[in-house]
Image (cartoon, rainbow, N blue to C red; front, side):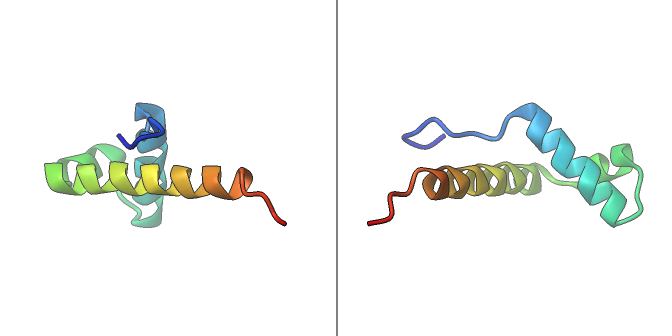
Length: 63
């Protein structure tokens, strides 16, 4: 979690995994089995980073 409290929600992680499973033409359960704990944490971090970037862009003030 960062200072703004932005985290990857379980539903967002699941949706990302579903997208990955489709991309790699793999069953979702099989993909989950193959991903290590470190890889899952990296997916969560990437989603949180993307949410942070979106928040920054949406709240940017152009002068």
